[in-house]
Length: 179
Image 1: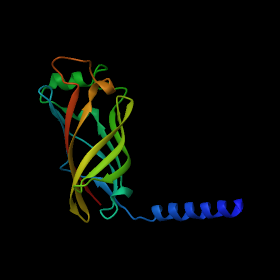
Image 2: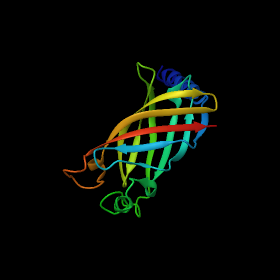
Image 3: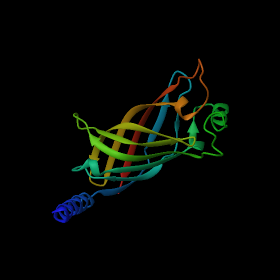
Image 4: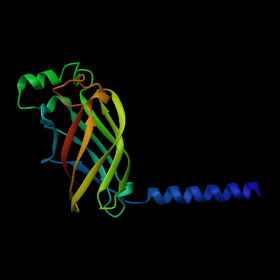
């Protein structure tokens, strides 16, 4: 009896894992026209580059994956001295940690039809789980993901507590991808 039950469980797991693996996703690359900006009273700016891979299926968004990278040295605050300071050990420590990375762990669809992309955000060598909301537009070979979320810079040891720089930074992004 135990062997029969174990066999049935084994077959069930095989069928489930095979079904999940057979959900087709399309592979995309980040394209020109992307933007990732951080906004606060001071500082505000953007990162000029972002790269990575996205596997996405509009019919089954839960099978999607996001693997993105932002080179820290592409920061642009509109102030050259501030850009240089952002590269220092106190802030992004670009020499040791040249990139900000995000790798999704799950994707769900909310009640409004937008995506909730949960994943690991790595900044300055510290990885924290975060959820990034995304509206989706386009179809076929060109899709754009857009959204707004917040990152607490203190959680990642980016700078020190300050009366002039807020702890939570608002991130606004637009991520066009194509096949």
